Length: 421
Image (tube, rainbow, N blue to C red):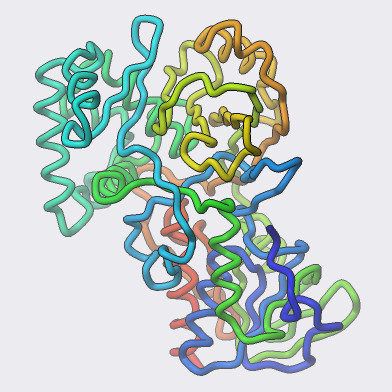
């Protein structure tokens, strides 16, 4: 699954190059692609053994395991600039969700999709008649808005926003909180309403999906668009002095300009700045001899019931994620510490899916400590990208915590680097 070919196996980076990008996550790759397409010489230095940053995938015994529960929102505006969606062989989720009510799941999806979707939507008690009308009005406003619906000065917590729209307490508990806190990795609905509106708009415009071979196909494809020999993995940058990049091996690479496209804590270390806490996600993958349902939608669970905020039967969505005859289930949620919540999660899964969940085999669990940078109500969507005359900073910590934000920040950093030469 890793991006491994001759372009990553050069014995050592060159001693001089036009542009150096530190970090081969999505922001660094977007910056490098933007520079390359502008006819500029670019070198990427990545500490890990493969590209992708937080967007990584592991193969274990025939299972495709993304590092954390991740999906691609295909309607992200920036995606088309950098990624060939057709070539990713995407597997879309159903455009809807499964909500937990009265001891079982009800699928709420586009009523035009099927008679089952229509019936499920009509019989659910999660949404009152007024909730449905309010949701329709919100959807129309989101789809017709050119400015993201909310301005920075109008931003507030997502919870306050939903209360202002007068959604029922039941809909907030069963639908909105597990959906939006799961996406923003917040304990509840304290995340930015402005950001939540942009996410909702993307979900309305296009489906969430995963590549058939895992999320790492996204950075792999981007890296494949760069010149051979321009991506060096397994190379750790120890410090940056002006436009000189010092490696842990003792080698030095000089550049006209340097783009630092790492996670915020790593960028703070290299630039001697302040490190900020991010949001973390715990996740666990389970195998089963039989899928607990045939649903291809994401399951939402209220926070009052347990740690599982989102559950997906990945092998229903992408059969390639599991070997034939097996099912792959992922459970995930926000976390404030280093605890995996595995014991509580198992109890939660048994409560939801019954005793069959007791026989599910744990394949892998983990915590992505900096799954997202912190983003609070009122924060700028685009923050300063220039550190000094020789260094430009990229990463979703400079824009919005998302694949969209990472790609935008990389492109803007590259354009700034070119402009300031």
